[in-house]
Length: 389
Image (cartoon, rainbow, N blue to C red; front, side):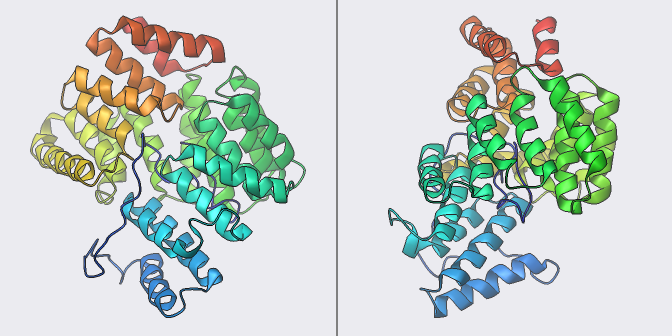
């Protein structure tokens, strides 16, 4: 999923592999323990606890609530645990149902709604915010992200053009490249992004995001060498970024290099997205069968727990697990179709196509082909799936 780095927008795509949504989990019992966090080794999680205690003492302090919401959003991204999104929403409870809250609360509310795939509500909030402040670059970036995830590429690019008036060149070019690369202009989007990266003196977080995006575009175009180069450049800047690790290990698995994926993932098994990649890599390595069985069982438990609490954030991942590990094509197709109804990125189309092929569903495959044709989508993995039928 497309996402922007802190300081430019508020970690918009927290769950790179996500799907049709339920509400974030909000506990009804103050004594309920959600998670035992490794606070001693993770300053951001210590901050969540500290800020939550401070907000309990000052519940009307919007600045404090906003800081807590941001920290909780970051913790959700780092751990892959959507329950932190519930904590972010809880921090904004005083402003959550207000039609016209202060701008800071409105942007955070839109960000949380985007992360839980309540895209319609997120767009309503962003429309309100941009009507108030037409040159709010952060709000425009956020709206462009939501529109891109929904496959509304022309509208997203219109917002990116407005971003270009108020943001760094690399931000604007990357914003536009995200949508352009999915709608028939992958080659010029990639070339422009490479040039912008080479000329940029932006902070490392922003460059890492742009390098990751360039790697993904190169991979979709079938340029493995270019993808490898950009992935490695991004890893040199932040080897702990969960989104980057998911994207790169997908690339490694796709290219028959699962052994290389395991050391990148083995310390991040708390993150559902990364545990899935770890299990997918282990499934391809005969000597890893024992640990694979453990991780498979753990994923089954996590998906079952998510269903019990009404959390469907990881529908794309569950579809992939169900197809590639569980071997249940019909159920994988059901999950993939539910996911596609909400989120329409290239990876969503890929699992939809793979499940449809396995389930021999000609109607769904026709939908996939029509989407590609209408949007002029260039994606080597989808082409390979079609040719392998």
